[in-house]
Structures are given as structure tokens and as C-alpha cells.
Length: 152
Length: 59
Image (cartoon, rainbow over all chains, first blue to last red; front, side, top):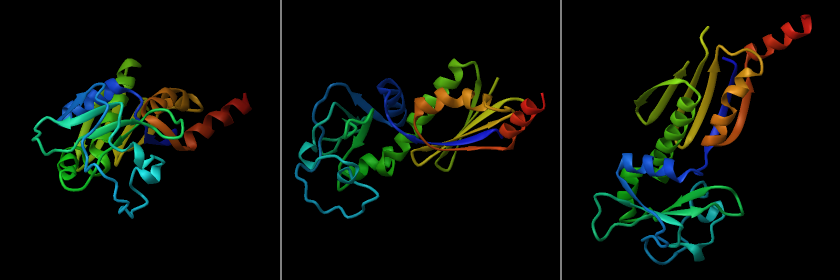
């Protein structure tokens, strides 16, 4: 091995997000400016490792977004995922959603904290970048871990 | 050893490992890839990268 780098997902490519979302079972709704959630912030979230508030998002903005994701297999009661600009002038977008009640349906598709969707986005970006650089990519999915091996 | 890039993705994070590259070429090979995926939070060189530096000094 020559070097090992750790990378944290930052969504900057909406086209790649569309591909990833579609693969998992979400519909990307471009320019939808609101997303369905409980409708009122109760300030009852205590897990500081999660929660949009602890990542710098203002609760007054909850329910507003640049674009949205909704379940392909949705019912009228389903919540949605808001694609929201990252806070504090950072580049990219965050995925914001209400995880209570109907939000559990979102997590059954996208994973807790949309981790499955983030994983699929990372894989889509990585595969695209590697193939553009002339690598042949093999993909393996096992127990929630995606492994890409690229060779020239 | 053939040049290989392995990307392991879990919980919204990725680890990018290179094999068969010597010296700084490993970083050149993955810089754009890492940037495309998000924010690099750690970068650990491995013995191969240091081997190239030693060859250069001898020359």
C-alpha cells in the first residue's frame, strides 16, 4: 500500500445523488422547496452525534429545502427528505429529515441518518471518477459495506 | 505489483487505499477521487511512499 486516506461524504453532485437515490427507491424532486415532516420542532432530540441542529442547521428552516427526495412507494402519510445547503457557508448539501413516525419509512430505504444513501452516493462518485481515469472497477456489496477495486 | 485503488465505503465514509504505487504518485492517483467524494479527514503514508524518497536521495 502507498497511502490510506479517510474521506467523509459531502454531497456536491446532485446528478450523482439522483442516480444513488433512484437505485435505492427514492424519487428526486427537483426544485421542490419544502419537504414533509412533523411540522413543528419539539427540541426533544438529545443525541448530539446526530440531529440537524447539532450540525448547525437552524430549526426555523426545517421543512424548507432546495430539492427533495420522496419514496417511490409512498403513501399520503410519508415524510420526505430535504436536500438543504450545508450550513455556515460550507460547500455542498445535507440531507435533512424527520426520523420519527413516518420517518422510519425513509430510514428503511435510506438507512439511519441516510447512511445507505450516502454510501451509494460515494460509490456512484467513486466509480464515475475511476472509470473516467481509465480504471476497470469491480464492486462488491456485503453486509452494508461497499468495496470498489479499481485496476488499470 | 499492479497499481490498484481500493475504496471501502461504510456509514457514509470512505477509505481509499492504494497499492503498487511508489512515492507521491499514489497521492496524485487519488487526489481528484477524494475531492469528488467529499472531505479528506486523514491521510496516512505507507512504506512504499518512503521507499521512493530514499531512491531519489541515492541518485
